[in-house]
Amino acid sequence: NAGVTQTPKFQVLKTGQSMTLQCAQDMNHNSMYWYRQDPGMGLRLIYYSASEGTTDKGEVPNGYNVSRLNKREFSLRLESAAPSQTSVYFCASKSSVYSNQPQHFGDGTRLSIL
Amino acid sequence: QQQVKQSPQSLIVQKGGISIINCAYENTAFDYFPWYQQFPGKGPALLIAIRPDVSEKKEGRFTISFNKSAKQFSLHIMDSQPGDSATYFCAASRPWGSARQLTFGSGTQLTVLP
Image 1 (cartoon, each protein chain N blue to C red):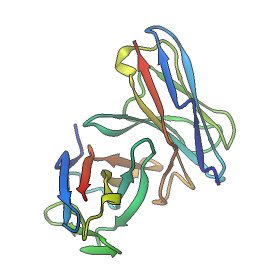
Image 2 (image 1 turned 90 degrees about the horizontal axis):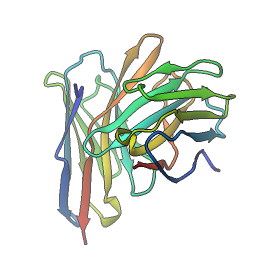
Image 3 (image 1 turned 90 degrees about the vertical axis):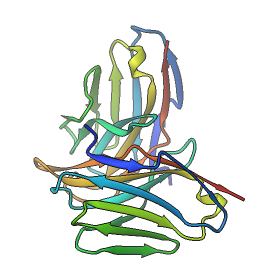
Image 4 (image 1 turned 120 degrees about the vertical axis):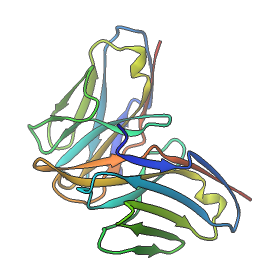
């Protein structure tokens, strides 16, 4: 009964380093999402994938890239990390991008960039 | 531009009291309004949701009140318990191209004192 699993849970990077955040869901959902959560800002959508093989930009895509590896997995890559990308990153999935079904969230990756 | 404004930022309530969190929106294209609950170290999870064709929805101790003309909606937690201590996000969903866009409020950190 895992739901949405994110790895790693914590990470510290230096400015300019790159890394990939991993996300996998076992609910057979078609759509997947990446958000960042910052104090006082709520959750802001970075990228989403309506289905395997498709990705689209959200509200704050600059500095990020994504890959929908297969139906289960959706990764987020920071090519050259910047201190402004210090945040908590959440992956979510939903049965369909077209529906109002609830999004199911992972427990987040806490990322600090020095 | 914050499309969904949430207040207060933080709220402290005594056990047994009523917690009230308010949200307001401008875009009349929003047609579905969920509330998410987030415990420390966890991802948000759907708590309760409402469509604008009803003025109130109740699930246990949690009630959403919706005022379509004022473009406002609120979450009421009756008989608040220490276990309700969490961050609460209102959200609003609307059609967006061929998908649906979910916009979150900035969050309210609720503390219920024993």
